[in-house]
Length: 135
Image (tube, rainbow, N blue to C red; front, side, top):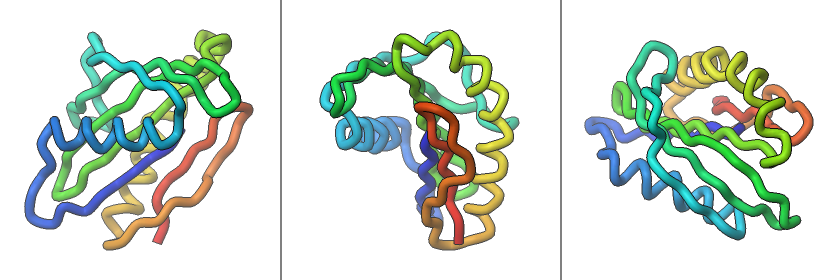
């Protein structure tokens, strides 16, 4: 899991801009990326969000599956990236769902409190890292 926040100051980023940013990050992380809009309604915290699902292959040729959540809120763009090896998707889904809201809310709170967020690791489990901004 990775979290990215960007301060847009006086504007909110558009959906296409947020998707382009997310895809750029995925293409930097993975050798192969395929994506499609998520069919399910998405939210982060209590805010409606956009989401898309992706399949990718990492540098060690491990196939992964994941989801990216996109949210523009109070002058910030937020991206939450979740992924796990394709073989472990079902086992990881329950744990990722359990931490999703709490990790995002902590990260968003810290981002709002600092004008220039950086990234720190707050929790790590096998095959998944939880990253949030810190000041």
